[in-house]
Image 1: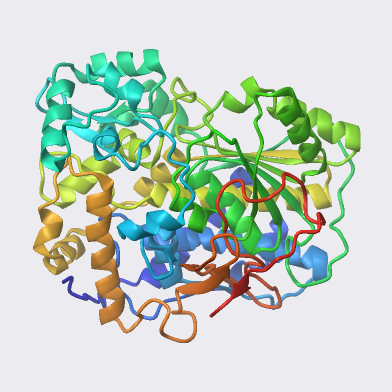
Image 2 (image 1 turned 90 degrees about the vertical axis):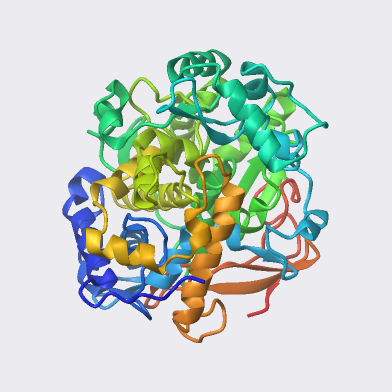
Length: 572
């Protein structure tokens, strides 16, 4: 069990506030509305215990809390527009809840069963159509392995269909004869070790796969892509298309900041869906579209689809495209969670959005989330959280923290949720500028840019890292570079949960801001679900969901008002 260490000489609250202030100091570069600045002094960061929860040497809780602070002040500025100005509209960010935000997709439960419970699979819609999750052999095609050169490591990633990645290194896409975890790792690594990292990069590029070399931070920022992306701000929000008049918000019936705002979401797995989830917390009507044959991780839909309607459309058919275009015509926000160029090839890039906005005389907010960013040689590469961690050097930093001479991928999807928060911030910023100045706005975020923010803020001092290591259980240091994220995340989550328990902030049991989760009955799942609570509280503003999550493809592909009853309800 992890030991609860409280650092008297270091304040997580003070550091969160410092990072928040640093972000606000770059308000022009980040296009944060000046009106949000008046709420800066009202932001309160609170923490039940001055405890570092993550077994990671980087300031994760503090950074996520700071981003949530920015999210809160921009939402407060929107509240001023909708409900009248208020100098005292205080914004409160709880650091325990911000901590949980960084891995909230993993802690969802259904009928008290977590992701690790085999029985939970029977309650989920099987969208793992290529067995990328259900087959251990195929799942380990997304993992870190040694290359032909001893000091080189390459993170294979078969995405949601590992066949091409396995074939790339000379293995069959499916193997029923190997079931043992260690045997599979040894088999795949033996094939990876036939190649150098450069050879794997070239093979990977030719097949359009998501693998990447594990770089050290100093090597990445000296690469052509690293040089270019490191010169970019954390996020950008810029006008696009023709000038259009300001768009007033709909008449409000409640104190939800985004009530009446329509959000069309085309995303996959954690980062993109978390953008829409946050906007749903503020009252937006979010419609997530997936394809009827599009693979997805079934368990992550419990958290990622919270507060949304979800529907299937086949965008490769004329009928599906016509239906999607009609939905876009009414959308205020469009979230694109695919790699750069995918949506353009489907015909739904910025140029079409600008045309739609001009035709209807009302701007649109385009939130564009990728892995590698939107500039540089690698902008069009596919990627995931593990890929972002390996390419930016975070994996080597984690390995160093664990006294290893190998990289260790972060056990938790921090970059996914961090980029998701930044994406939601760009949507809020765009909506503010659309209401005040008019026009359409393009928000750009990436997992790599979140990691660069996190890395740029520095590591904990050496003596704090030493105390952190002393507080961690032996099984954490038994983790190897080749252990997959299911194994490492399970250990990391148990460490964090024990710290919460020892700090008397047991999830969902303590009244007040330390309550970290909430329970709902989902009519679509026919089950009780438990998910992370929203992080930000704003005075005189309502937040929270109006419906529970549901599996992909549950609803009709249309905006609300289609006669569907909301039979979900909050339990606690």
